[in-house]
Length: 638
Image (cartoon, rainbow, N blue to C red; front, side):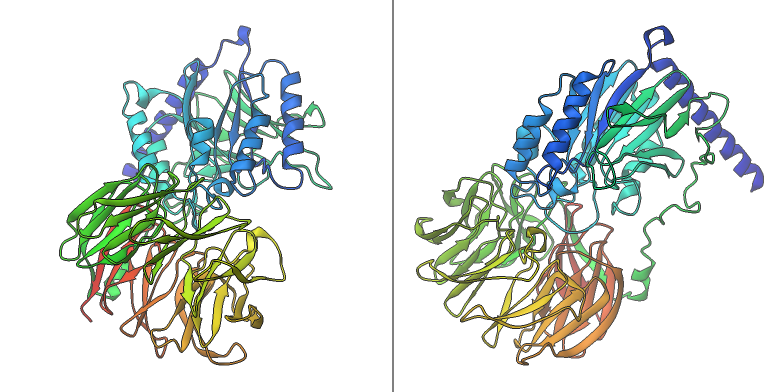
């Protein structure tokens, strides 16, 4: 065994040495100087000083000499709005040297366009280019629309696979550029890291952490750059990178001065990659400090739970399935909406919209209704998938419709909330002036249409006229604390919501007045209602699922259960069916609890990707969609 380990180590040593020989040969000859570029990260245009600090960086770069190009590695904006993105582009387009850009989580999670504005403005949300023999690959990890870990989208992984399959690719020195570190902050981090280990990867450049930091991704050198933003104590700045024949250096530029290198990756062909002043990288999986690989052993504890069938779309799914007769209907990031048969997951029909679909459909009156990022609301024949009508809006639609009494209610990203006739798609009424975009699945109850928006507010409109009945705002008036991702529920004349400020609130449905508000449970955006309307379910950010009385005048728990899921911030809802409460976590764990007692009935790890709000068919059958683009029917024979 020791001999085998020595041989394996020698192979890794030889591979690492080859990488460095090639990288040293790839940079310009010393007489022409090193390859030199500026690296901007976490610009957060839309925050207090984001635009001003970015303008200052652009001016400083334009005054510099000898830069070959610029990298911009995500969190370009604060909230991913079109106005913020356009402003950032206007500023960056002032650069006199070409720049390459990817989005970060702030550009994709709170995106009113489902992250489609970014490629519309810049032409793409990923890049590949070469300088000399060095190849630079840039690819982001989202997450799109959902609060959770980053995730390599299946369509982006295919793109990377295609690049790496090109002739000569396996031997080309590569710098990989992304936003999150290649660790557990990305749910499927290992998918890309394992590919990078098969090519001569000189370094992985990341942002997100707002600090200069040397990193090690199972032997692949990593470097994190500071944010360009200044603070009360820290001047604005960015990173200057040089790749020479013997080293790759990283220096901070601030106050119009380039400081001495704070980090160096030695390009010494006689030994494996070493961070100057640091330890040698081993390239071994599972070494100290490396995140663990996925573990599915939990499923062995519940042998009566299994996947009956699975359909792989090959594209990110960031919405839930809807039941339509003997099929379930779901959309994906390719713009396709499909109906899959309960019996075996086969395709009953498909419809192609003009943009990614992140809107959970609703079904009623023989129609399937959903929104698309192409800016339209669609109604299809539920049996055939044939289009019945299409209603245009002025911006992408990521909101989830609700059908009630022959009317479709749906929000959008153009500040207009609409009521459309289910039969024709014609406007019944519209309400203008919603200050934030709408993504939630709204609530129709007691003559009111209730929904949150990403402006910090909860709205109630008159169901018949669209007139504002009331609006509510919490005590932390920030868009980031909006009750906009939770699907509000109502019982006993009250609306119940949770929000990222970790507060749960009960609001009088008739007046909009607070009945109670509590931080007793560290909630976020996950909520649900029992079938008998006596309990509201919430998931906390650490292990606990709780049931709270809908009738009490104070936040009164019915039960609390340690479900053992660990840290979770997924924005999926809890759903009860036939006395079983279902919930899916940000890391692919499906949990079933007894609705009356809260006891855990079973758990099943579907995968590693974020699970959207699940769609139970019964207390023993539940349809699950995930970020890996899969639709699974999980069944329990217990």
